[in-house]
Amino acid sequence: LGARGCFWAALTLAFTPVFWIHTTDAMDYSWALGLALVSFALAVHARPTLAGVALGLAIGCRLPTALLIVPIAVLLEGRNDPRFVLATILFGALALAPSFLTYGTRFLSGYEFGRVPWIYVVKGATRDVWGVIGTIAIAVAVLIALFRVRRVPRRELAAVISAVVLTGLIYLRLPHDGAYLLPMVPFVLLFLTRALAKPGAVALASLLLLSALFVNISQTDIHALRTRGGARPPFRPFLRPFIGGPELEWGKGPLLVERDKRIDLLQTRDLVLQRAKGRPTTAVVMVYELLPAIEWEARDAAGPKFVHLLTPASLEIAKQDGQPVFATEDAWDAEWQVHRVHPEQFGVQLLSAEPISF
Image 1: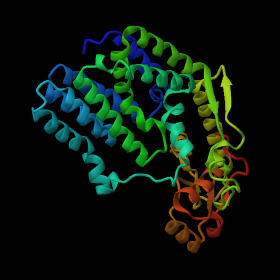
Image 2: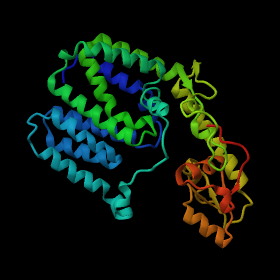
Image 3: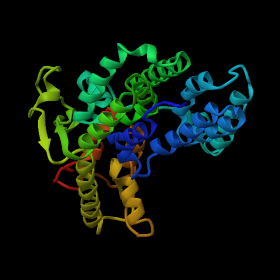
Image 4: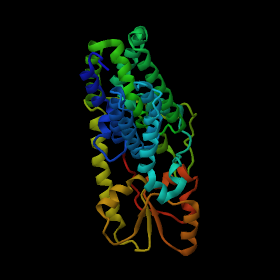
């Protein structure tokens, strides 16, 4: 696009905590965004068919990436060319065909966690994306950029607005993870780079690096405050997110916090596997989000069956058949959060009395 400071804008994206973290795991966010940016580049160079191929593959990685068809189409030279949309639909359909053939239309369904308190919706859209320093830096930069909005080419501005609005609407529908906002991050950075030019891009890259590595704010998770059986703690709703108080941490930013979480996860996995030994081979152990780590480590081991969660119907069948069911603390709480059932009424036993600390 010929924007000044484009190298620094790329570094700013690389240093954005939510992007940096998800380039080091098996989630689909960064894969989808990477292919979408390839589509973006091809669109800028007036290659509509190849841009559609890249975006279709991005949709195959992560379905909500389809919303970027609007801002990328806006940036296409000769935007009335149907090849971009047709190629996107064709390759998106081909990429998603295995999911459709396996699950039918159920692969389009979302995963509900229940209502999210408003403070966590805000946290997901700010700290979880940009970090603490980064959130302040982006807010100040946007405020300054609004006074320089005329520096942004009209077509690019339309693309930025459409990306932010569409991504924001998707996030508000299921505001469970700040990473859901990742598709709009490059467009926000494009807007700021255009408006603030190279000095602004350099400042943002530097501040995002500091934000990712050195500063974090911790907060008690509302889900961890629920008592067993699904009861809510006896506090006013708007105070619950602040129980224990938000705590500013210096010298350990989101990346280092994420590293600690992963070490904790592996230690918890080993503890669960150790305590599952000796349980009946007919038993089922609900381990919630620990399941991928357990399956990777013990995929060929004999013993109980590990599952994510069980539906009320499955729990009832297990109870009637006398099949022993166990649950980690996280899975115990998640049964109420996701399925609105109390595990003890189905005879579920806790596998560990120790909470999973992350």
